[in-house]
Length: 125
Image 1 (cartoon, helix red, strand yellow):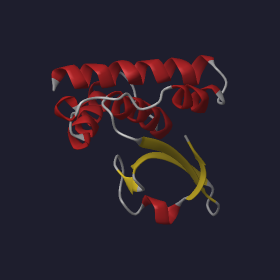
Image 2 (image 1 turned 30 degrees about the vertical axis):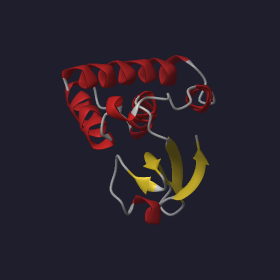
Image 3 (image 1 turned 45 degrees about the vertical axis):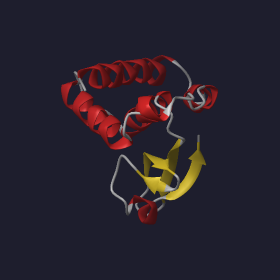
Image 4 (image 1 turned 135 degrees about the horizontal axis):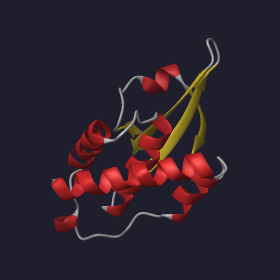
């Protein structure tokens, strides 16, 4: 578990750098370039445990974690352990808000399950 939390924390730091010093279009490109890593079933960590590790990493992060940063990091973490997950970016028009979350087989894994009813999908990566 400690290893997963450390790995999640480092991914948060990586995406902090990407979001601060690179263009926005780099973030989806990075996610598309990291396909799901094939792993044997006995090596595949449960997706719930990995999402919990990300939750803990967010608690220990040195500043507030944005949903885009967290979802991008969660996507990479889950893909490293063989999960076919997508990051979804959505928007709500009135009042205007945007949000990002992760889906595994169309099911939200790192946010509230009804989030898809609030936001219209803009992009999947």
